[in-house]
Length: 277
Image (cartoon, rainbow, N blue to C red; front, side):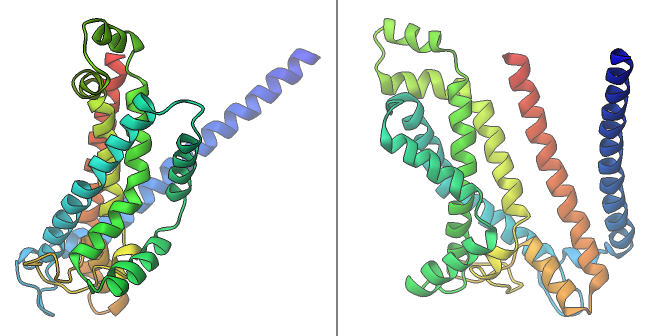
């Protein structure tokens, strides 16, 4: 009787697991299909003109602005996150209070809503520093937002490097800095790259933080001090206006393809890390 109860409970758990998985897949497929059906018929050559007008509502300036803001954010956040991770793993002591504070702050920053980052960027970069609505203000705001993600992923990647490699480098006379830069960092590079790619995916899909910092001007920025809109902000602006809903769906298709590509590259890197391990 007891065995029958166990088998019955296992059957219920298995059915619940499969049902949850199928429901998730169905919802995902429905969302993808809904976006594709609504957006593909509106993908036209006019959407890829380099000059935005109220007639063509081109997404090309937003696409270029997305690339520029992404690169600027990574240039700011990636070195800080990687070298902070090296310090946490290779230099800081395990019982150091500063290490605990940095870890807690990184986890706290990772859980803050993006709208809060946008308000902070508006108050500090746009208003206090006087940068105005600009690419520079948006890039600095996003760099603060993705810094915890890069820090945590880099820290885990560096921790995964075998301790024997460090001991071998020390035995050959290499110092701690040389070991970290020439032994540990190259070995952890795939994991660090996966974290950076995930950060790129978050930047590409970010809207709230950029509306308050980089603005919504539909133009190709010629300098970091100019305002610009990314693809996600462009899609939000078109849908909120209500005059170009089809073009907003077309922008969503392009944005979805970019995000899927980024996630696929990240998964491929993660698989390679698993094979190497």
